[in-house]
Structures are given as C-alpha cells and as structure tokens.
Image 1 (cartoon, helix red, strand yellow):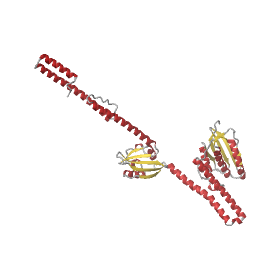
Image 2: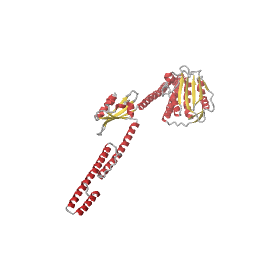
Image 3: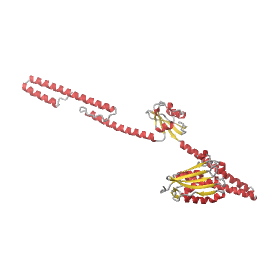
Length: 445
C-alpha cells in the first residue's frame, strides 16, 4: 500500500479539512473522508507504477548479468535500494571473476602453445577435448579433430591402447616411431585425471628424435673408438710377444718387429691425440680466440714444416701467391689444427711423384683457404660423409697410411666454431680440393 504521508496526500488532506471546517459537520466530514480516500488511491496508483518500473528495470539488469553484460546494467531502483545495491555488487564480483578466468585461459593457452611437448586431453567417452599445437604437429592431427573420437583421427595402436588404459584408470607409458611418417621418435605417458570436469585423461608426448640420434652416435663412436684402439694395441702386443719368445736373437727379424712396434705406437699415439682434440673441440673446452691471421704467411710457414714429409714421399709441395693484405679472423692454433689435418691427409693419400698445393683467395666478406692434391680422388657417394668421425672412403688404404678417421671431423668442428665452414670438391682419378671458408678480418674489401 502507498504511504498516505506523502506530500501530495498531505496537501489534499489539509485542503479537505479546510473545506470541512467551512461547511461544518456532517457534510464537511463526509467530504474530508472522501478526499482522504481519493488521496490514498492516487498515491497507491503512483507508487505501484513506480514499483512496477523499478521491478522491470531490475529484471532487465538481471537478464543482462545472466548474459554476461555486466557493463550494460545501471541498477537504479529507488523502491528497492537494497536489492539494487546487491545486484550491483554481484555484477562487480562477476566482472572481476570473469577477468581472472580470462587471464587464466590466456595464460593456459600460451603455455600449451609455447611448450614443445604435445598435450592431448580426452573426455570420458574417448572424444578429444583439447590438443595443443605441438600435438597437432607431431601426430599430423587435422584441425577438426576436436570433439571426435581419438580413434577416428589417429591410427596409432600404441597410443590408442594407452588412451584406453588411462580412461580405465591406469597410467601407461609408451614409445612411438614414425607416427606421422616424418621419421620421428616419440615417448609418451597417458594418465587418468582425478577431477570431475569434462577432462577424463591426459596424454603427454615428447619428441626424442634428436636424443635417440645422439645416443646412437655415442654408441657408434664408442664402438668405433674401441675398434680403432684395439687394432694397434693388438699389433703391439703381438710384436712384443714375438720378441719375448726368442725373436730378439734374430737381428733381422728383431729389427722388423721393432719397426712394426714403432709404427703401431705412433699410430696409437696419433689416435689418442686426435681423440683428445675432438673431445676438446666438441665439449667447448678448446677456447678459440679469433685474431687477424695473414693467410699467405701462415700457409708458407705450414708448408715449410711439412716439406720434409712431402719430400720423403717424392711429392712437390707448393704455395700459390697470396695477397699480403689477405687476413682471416680466426684462432691461429685452431687454423693450424684444421689446415694441418688437411695437409697431412693430402700428403698421406697422394701417390709418389704427385703434388700438393696450398692457396687462399678473397671472397665477399670471407677468406677461402684450399689444399689441393693429385691423389686418387673421392667418389661422390663418400663426399657427404667423409667429415663424420671414423668414416673412411677406403678403410683398408686409410689404415695402411696411418689415418685415424678423425682429422676431417676435427677440421669441421673447428671451422664451424670459428664461424666458417669446410668442404671438398673431388672427382675419382682427378685429385681433391679440400677448402675452409673463414670470416675475413675487418678492413678487407
């Protein structure tokens, strides 16, 4: 009911009293009562209209809140101030909570997208609820795979079996090879989720292709190194046992066996030195300190140190004319290790009467140093692999000349750590040209 104490009602009531006093009772009293009733009725109608308008406004505001439009409501209701304030506070809390949820969703999406591991989340019915970008890439999932049974999108038995086990409440680990035809190796784990939401199981996939490759390289290296070390050690042991069993009495045989001992000991020493050099280069313990190195003077000095070895094989060792201003920015010891290995190989594999030539030329922003020989050359099928550790194009001949199979691998690592590269140009029967490209020193055009 309307309040009869409103200003309008009081004014009408006062006017009625005045009329009643002027007319006298009972006619005046009757008029006063009629006026009072009229005032109350008018006030009630006005109040009801205002209340109806406030209720409609609050209903519209509540509907906006229900649809997430917290900013479109004004919460003005004079007839219901407490309710309007409560709805306003509710909208404020919902707005803050929506903001937090949005930030958390953005953070979760960024984490799932940025991580390298693949994530698959499954519903209890086996349908795919979520898959991040790495999972799509590793498994070649179609973009429309969400909300479809996982078995419809993948044909990987080990993964599907692990998913079924996780949905049944059992955590399972598995490994996949070449799941999407890309030659990858993946390891994964499927586990059930304890929450009561839509997510029932999660599968985590990790790409271990590079790890497996490095493990295989390590196994191959250990096997190759063991084999290479065993050969000279066995030869040394055989020579020593033969000498100890009485060959010392035969001066001719003893001299031959001692010569063999010396040769195998030198080979063993060379192999150990190369292994140590390769270990230092690959581990980064060999600190390279680049400085300007004059290419011409460096090659002349290196050729002079190898002149005796070349002469012993009846080889002609020459250095092409090099511009005195041609300088490479490289660690001198590292460069000596690289070019020394290349020159040593050229001398070893070039037949007697051949020639070995050193040279350097200017390239755009770089210096290319070459070691050319007139040896037997290298077949194209071997050229891509000769810089691998222990790889030999002709294993038997390499052992005959004392090669360890590590020199080119060392040269490649040092060249790359110096900011350059190394390569070969060769044709069978036409010799070889091994080259290294290095950064030029500043000031070289």
